[in-house]
Amino acid sequence: MTHALYALPHSLYSGRARSYLIKNNIPFQEFSCGHESYKAEIVAEAKLATIPVLRTEEGQVIRDGAAIIEYFEAANGRPCLPATPKQQIISGLFDLIGAEGLLRPAMHYRWNFPEENLSFLHYHFFHSQRDHPEREAKTQYMMDKMRYAATVFGVTDDSRELVETLYMEFLLALDKHFEQYPYLLGWKPCIGDFGLLAPLFAHLGRDPKPLQIMQQQAVHVYRWVERMNRSNQDAPECYNAGSGFLADDQIPDTLLTVLRAAAQDFLPETRAAAQSINGWLADNPAVSGDRASRYLGQNDGKSHFVVRGQSFETGAQPYRFFQLQIVQDAYKSCDDAERAGIETMLDSCGLQELLTIELDRRLEQRDNLEVWV
Ligand SMILES: N[C@@H](CCC(=O)N[C@@H](CS)C(=O)NCC(=O)O)C(=O)O
Image 1 (tube, rainbow, N blue to C red):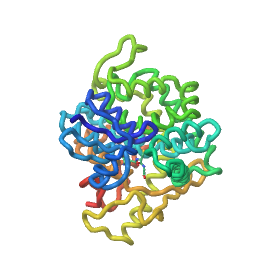
Image 2: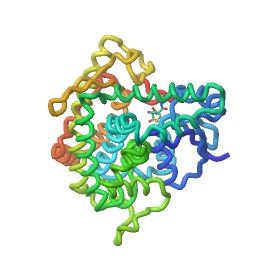
Image 3: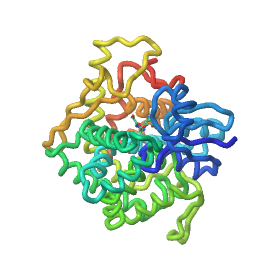
């Protein structure tokens, strides 16, 4: 038996795990979550009906894209984790910003352009369902559920213009980086490339409306998206391509510019989410091992923040802080000189505060769920 990846072509988090398997030459077979084995054999062990889920060749079930990557990283000597301090922090930040910080533009460009996207989306949602009498009704239900999720991430009629402006600033900065290097940290993908691919593949680099924007205005990002889904280095445009990560813990300035663009809404949202979740924790003291649900208390955990005069209200999700902890733990494990270097680097892109924004309780993944420690 080979590894089985339960995933879908249009699923944001599936793209992250799939790319990791492809890039690391790990053989796998992909199954839809509409496959009967998903409901019959996988969900009970996965604990939540999300994708991606991996069933390893030994039969272990691993839910969550980051956990799937961590399983192989731990087993294979961490091939995608840079060994040096600044690169490790940058990799972790892109993983976090990809998995959590670009959900707003990803949902906006998927759901708010029906003329361009709807038939494409219908194909994918319809074929995620098994052939049964309720297939079309279930398709509409799932599409409505996801359309609603866009509003939970803060896309409204009032905010959409700013969502687009922020995305374009981010995209164009990223394009400048990939003009120079084929991957974030040089010549091969790091953990951050996989997290960043999540929104930039299934939604922003594949749905018709945002795909056109990427192809026409950010061709280097488009090529990186293609590249991340191919097992070879796929960088023929680089006539002097190297191998591995950049030497001497080097961080290209172009990456700091990308982070500066991302910080615009990522930092205030993270600050507000921590405040909201800490307030919730104070009122709802958790016992160690209690599940840290995606949305606390049935959606009443909200973050309120303002970017360039525009107010946002979004769902405050603990998962963002599970990923942030990884970055903060890497920072804490450094010596004084390394920490000072990281602080200066993050200060230059407006993200230094991320090193200290914490929840009052730590999070851990246990038995396929995020729980309070
Ligand atoms: N933290 C999880 C999130 C997975 C997730 O939310 N997947 C989406 C598809 S991209 C899903 O299954 N949504 C269905 C639902 O939430 O009911 C991961 O990184 O794998």
